[in-house]
Length: 145
Image (tube, rainbow, N blue to C red; front, side, top):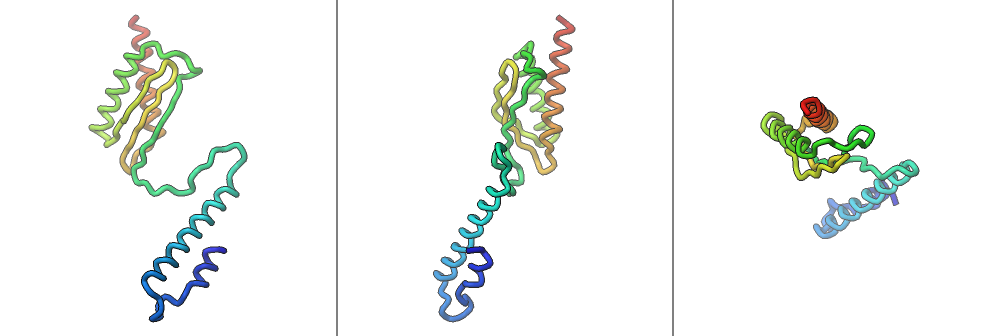
């Protein structure tokens, strides 16, 4: 049954016989049908071998879990240096742009982190800046040594 059919088959809720319990039950049934219909249409549109994506999200300030790797998966020369750069970048982001860095893990050839920003936060720009900062710091450290 489609949502339209459920709505047209609904009892006359404005008449004296439409009790609050009946209204609540009808409303819940419509919500369940709408959710089922939305899920079914999403499954039909999925591309083979591609992970399921949500059509809509209603979170104003989502929390992102990000993983990024070094170029060609090369080892980060100084994990301590990368950590110092990451923490300074996060401090400045918090103070100047209302961006919060959560837990993070720096691995020899990649980084995992949680990050959240305000309404104007652009994840790609922020991550690009972080990668650039770490790369520049690592290059400078290599030249000094």
